[in-house]
Length: 249
Image 1 (tube, rainbow, N blue to C red):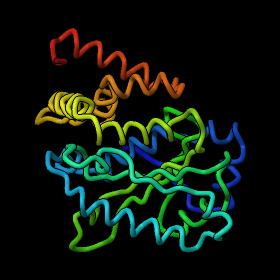
Image 2: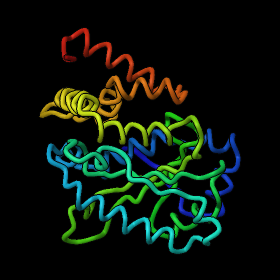
Image 3: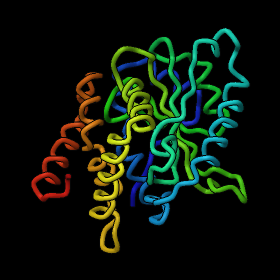
């Protein structure tokens, strides 16, 4: 059975984030395996018609809650952005939205870390793409009657720099929202990936996420923003396999 190491104590979490070696040693991937095995329902992993408007409004309200306890002098140096598939109207995807908090420095201010933890989020580690992309998760959104009730929300905290995942997430979202070819390429890649990895015979969310990241825009932005994590290499391999199989147009 999958286990996890989610952390809630702000002193401990801030200490880990401020220690490069401890941050590298925190087991992010087992935490993700636990989420897949114990939190996500298969029917929520790939939804053809996401309720984008409702999710966007919920994200805005969540931003207000988290930022409300952050001092103004710190808050003025933060940016909260809605990213991922739920920020791209018309894009299919999971019912688990993503947000991005951009900071002017790394490690992030302890005040935003403390506020996230106080508002029901757990620290799960650094993302596999970028060691300065810190992940927090609200495992069970408790809002009866809302489309996100029982789902989870992941928040990335990353520096607002000229490289890294923060820039990739923003440009990827904006490009898909403004360029129809980029939108369709990503959508078709996701549909093919879901058909292969989220079907009646198998449920491999990690493989799906890697495969969908093999769209041309994601790979190009990975190069542009110097993303060199192991999952990028895996995404490139997945794209090559789809092209060889004739899945790419």
